[in-house]
Image 1 (cartoon, rainbow, N blue to C red):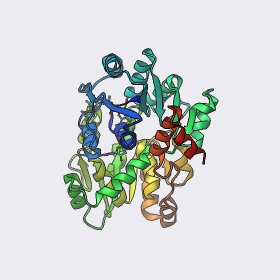
Image 2: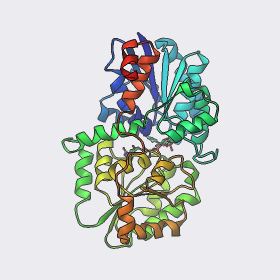
Image 3: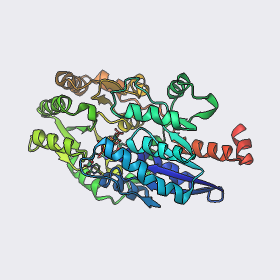
Image 4: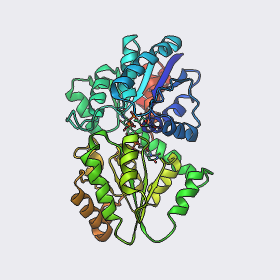
Length: 383
Ligand code: UD1
Ligand code: UDP
């Protein structure tokens, strides 16, 4: 029996780890599976835990209002130690590029515990963008023993950093597994957020769904984004729906600039199924989010990414994503093009699966079964 501890802390990590938790729990004879949440996020994490019905075995409850990177990093490392000493996992699984990811990996390494990294190998090669995520990913890659890369190009990034090929498995992204699970449930779910967004979406207007939270956009970037949203909202056939991230720096500025503006609806963060429903329903998405760039191609939704660099070039190459940065004029003109140029809109609305078909969690778990000695599984995989 192998002891496996999944550690996560923020909304996107929870969404991307949920299908993996579910898959690991299918093998109770082989894996003793436990979940530890750092609760780097609180409300936004709990929304996801509730939807996927995950009850953490350890909840470190670390979030502080307006926390800083130094405090959060040190509290994750310190609080992980007793958990690791209590459960004594053979493997710790972390996901992505947050402070929780890098700090939990380091805490496990300090105790000689093997680390598996899900969504390994994403790179912009610019240590300041996204900040601090690019460095969190690189740190985690140096620490990890097993690297689950979502795409071939992520694998190549790892190979360039001298990670041995036999330690890398290309799996697709578990976000697709999560999205497919959510899509199955959205139509029948009784989630009150879904009713709310359905009501809000009534009417003929084209819905532009907005999210934004990146640290490197704080300051001028966010000011420009808000100006652009106000301008785009002046098109009379448009309705902007913007669930605002709970980071107080984002809340303050967005509400100051965009409260009570015509055609702009600011909401609290939505439950995952409600957000998925809205992604399906909307006309286009304006975002700086990482995960949304991966989900949109599956739904055939055009995305304008308000960043200067992306580590997710696959969606740019598939034609679903255009990088627009945070220049007001560029954001406004790109929205205008998508609203009024049907050829461009058609090209960007094709369904693509650059991040896999929803089998990432299955592949990861089969690989873990193989490396932990289940020879029957090995035979099946080899076939
Ligand atoms: C974090 C991650 C980022 C990820 C993002 C996903 C780091 C450094 N950043 O950024 O990589 O893309 O999550 O959303 O790991 N807050 C709440 N309630 C919540 C969540 C946040 O009140 O449920 C507020 C708190 O005041 C908190 C602040 O937001 O201190 C910032 O949260 P933090 O996790 O440090 O940064 P994010 O900007 O959310
Ligand atoms: N999301 C959600 N509710 C919202 C906004 C986003 O459930 O109100 C989901 C979205 O579908 C995606 C993830 O949250 O799966 C993205 O999280 P975020 O943008 O916070 O982080 P990032 O992906 O940029 O790290």
